[in-house]
Image (cartoon, rainbow, N blue to C red; front, side, top):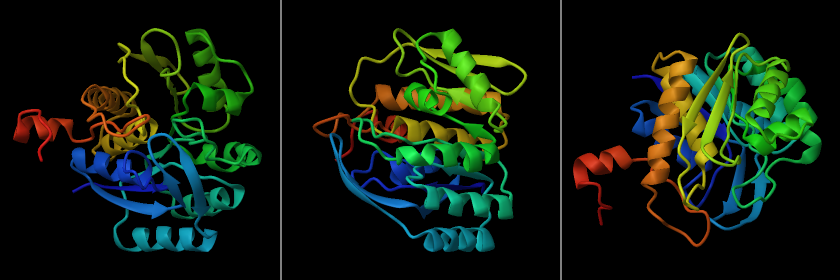
Length: 270
């Protein structure tokens, strides 16, 4: 069995963070493990607070995972501050894992900040160069590049600029654009587009976490980057379409939609 590791924050409401990552790993048939970087008190409409885990505890979690069950892919999510970023970067440089997918989580779906603004420079200098793939949405790509992103050409330019920061490939996600949701991948040689019709729904909590962990799962299973992104796009679209409509705000997606179709005829099982 292939193994995947999520290094990320938690979401007590279950739709994002390591909870979403574990569900996504399981849905792809890979064995999931976690290193918790922050404990977040949140639900579908607000983030109440979060507490960062001590850097030495983060490093010890990573050491213990790699000592016993080395992962075939690593997904990295919420890194809220410089100290957390430096701890994770030290271990990535030391352990040199394959298939590192970074989701640069800066904001929750409701707009609450999950990364200190002063830490963005550290993210770019210390973490981005260690990524095989990084998956910013449009607001995150704007913060990273300092440019306004409104058109598909802007997305391509942003992807080019982020690739120049040292990562091997970048996907700029188009969920915040108008019209169809088009994600654009740049691998240093060519651009690839992944279009999908926009789903009219508010239930998109944790989509970035889920998308990046789906990519990591597919990379662990041996797919090339272009195909891994394509499969992950198909998975997250179906998860959004089949969202269980939970919560008072931006509800979670349905990570096990295929299993529910097979076992429960597409209905939620009570």
